[in-house]
Image (cartoon, rainbow, N blue to C red; front, side):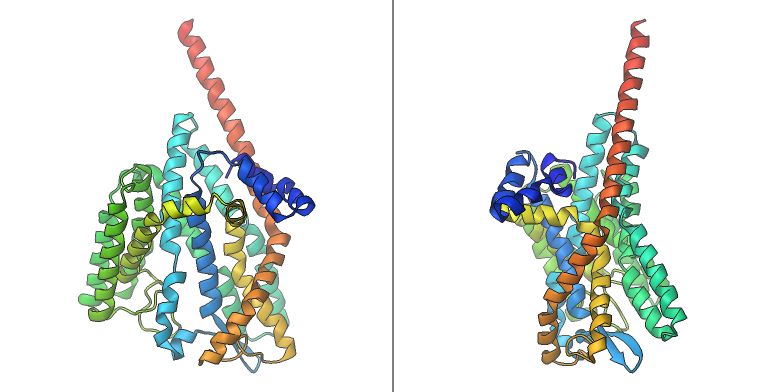
Length: 414
């Protein structure tokens, strides 16, 4: 995210204009400063993917108060017919699709400019893991404080597990990013075949469940390599998007209806099989359908992002994507713990066993957004600091590379 519009947004200069001239004035400044060649559909898809995951967690994750203990629960346990609600909010495949596209495009650009692989990778990982230190630091302090105060061990474990659960995604994404030079030409059918064989061994031949963890890499490698195919120009025709959408939907429906896969695309506490932890073949085919839909929507998104206010909103989400992703569970838990001082409140501390809970939880969403906004304001400097350090390193590396090329050319002429 190095375009002048996004950098000025990050450092607050454009938003000073927002405060002076209003939202529309600031949005128009962002729109005017964005280079014409930027594919705004990519940023829109990333924003949708991040917000989908956040809203999904907020809607299906319940912290139920039983005396002094907090335990996790899900409305999908008592109301399994709500499983379709999980479908639009399980957007990780879209994030990996965009991630693969951006990483392969960025790596090709770095090679063209003579930037070494290790400098390119360090810059990307710095941006990826910049906010992690703040999350780990805060939750280390919170965990020690909870244990010293005599908080129930099960409650402490529940809170810490929820807070740190987003880190698994970062580790997988970082591994795929590091392997980008090896994945630029990999066809998505290869990791899809791995997922298929793993599930046949697990569910068809009674193999050990631990085999499923192979799919943690192979499953998300499918949309990531689709992103690389996008970069190569192989998915530009709408026929590719339609094929992915139709075939992915048909395969997912068949696996759920006849192969016994869960209908929910998110984990459900107490369920024998989870489609997400680790990813199953049904989760991967569902992700293919989502990637197909995302590809089909690109032109509409490009048109929508021409509106300054819509583009400014997408840019803001993109600039804070990792902060939003890492802190949304903390915002949920902070709200739950603070409100517990007022007693057991519907939709926050009560069992998610009816539509009344669902309605109450939806009413709590603005409070979660406010808590997340506070987290972003408090910890965005970590993300910005990582960006600044990464940019400084990339600039130094580019200068050294240019100097080395100049020295080589000079020696050649001598």
